[in-house]
Length: 377
Length: 197
Ligand SMILES: Nc1ncnc2c1ncn2[C@@H]1O[C@H](COP(=O)(O)OP(=O)(O)OP(=O)(O)O)[C@@H](O)[C@H]1O
Ligand SMILES: [Mg+2]
Ligand SMILES: [Zn+2]
Image 1 (cartoon, rainbow over the protein chains, first blue to last red):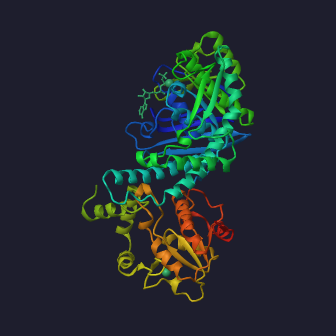
Image 2 (cartoon, rainbow over the protein chains, first blue to last red; image 1 turned 90 degrees about the vertical axis):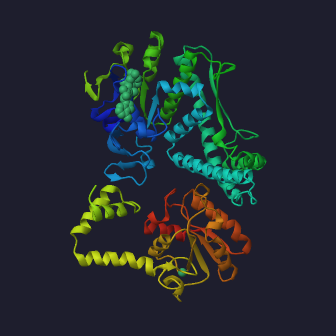
Image 3 (cartoon, rainbow over the protein chains, first blue to last red; image 1 turned 180 degrees about the horizontal axis):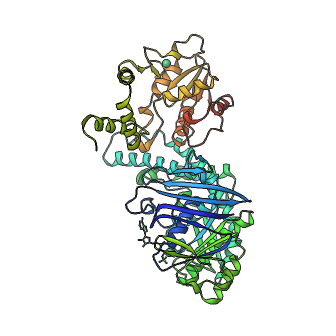
């Protein structure tokens, strides 16, 4: 799979720009702040409907404009598919697939498979568990797009259930006689257990498949210093790490019953996949709080490369994006990384200094200037 | 900004669901240049809808008399009752031609985020209807989204102990969506393939 052309209108710093990309390596070169990351961020958005840098859509729209458009042509198995997204902050995105409008923006997921590594990914190791859950869920959806629905359903149920618990909590606090309407809590429990079991099973299957790839990728980028490990830590008691949906739903139901009074006390849902953790270890130590800056950075890169490897092992050839990677690496590790990703069906690399990119990844080169992109080789 | 009446019309149209400022402006200028009789007919239709249309006292569908057309139809069976969220869902199901029973319109779905619980829906009225003993099958045709599913589960829990068979539309409907957006064939199929819950 590769992106053949990318066009932006009022996206980030670009008023209007179009760039033809090639299979194999594409290197985007330009001074700090000219808009290199903005370009790959747009592709990331098409792949995940989310920015890797910001949680809301407003910063994606060029200052002064009211909406942004990302248009890209993706070639897969020799066929070209046009994907178009219009981002209107505060409203639902509008999407087109090929010539017809998509019913929901979510329908474009799967059209572009992409793995992106960016400096922000340091948070995967250093940040809150939410960062690692998002990493897993994004990869899960990338691998099996139907999980986009599972994830959305689960998140919606948690939101609704929390709203119910909060009302009950407030009613209790203000001395309301009825203590809030908790009559439907059992209904939300059922749905939380059902969608939660589906999501949890998906994550557990993913982690099992991903683990060897993480160890291998870390070994490659960190030059064999300690073994990287990942382990899924559910917020509920599980006798064994089963992926049987019915057993997981049962365990979730039991956990909800056990934490019921605490949940009403705190007005929020305390157990379920939205409270789980993906533990990262280097040798015998946890990575968070122990790993050095370089080790953390290598671990984050290894997590992304492992995801990329796994998708390729599944027979999907995603686009790989490495934003600002090579400047962080010494020559030996640059060469090893180049070797690792050299076979990508398409690779997009951004860098401020041309010489940082190993010769093996020369490929097609582009000069990025303020609001413009020009092919230079 | 335009002056006076035309801007008032643009503002009013812009408050309608699904009408953005650009469409509001286009419609307003269309009205301005249209034949006066057409405009009067539109104005009349707007006035009449508030004067004449009310809710059926049996099923809470929109009606022009005490009871709606469907509740008055003697050829339909009283033994099967289909629960929907909104009157527009009745229209969608009627289009499939698959259903010959009666309806019950809840007026929404359970939605704690919007402060809507069972007491805010016509669930008590539904229980009274079911208590009369004629209904043998209750079809839960709430929307295939989080709130619709929760409402269906809630109703199933309430109704099953009454010994009435409870069914839910078959899957295959676009998940996360509204019933009204499903095409006739898909919805018709979901109706036929409904299963016990
Ligand atoms: N919504 C927006 N409207 C206008 N300009 C924006 C918007 N969002 C970001 N920018 C501008 O885009 C530039 C940042 O672009 P980008 O992050 O792509 O830089 P870069 O080329 O990747 O730089 P570096 O090499 O430092 O990573 C900043 O100058 C910023 O002001
Ligand atoms: Mg950058
Ligand atoms: Zn009626």
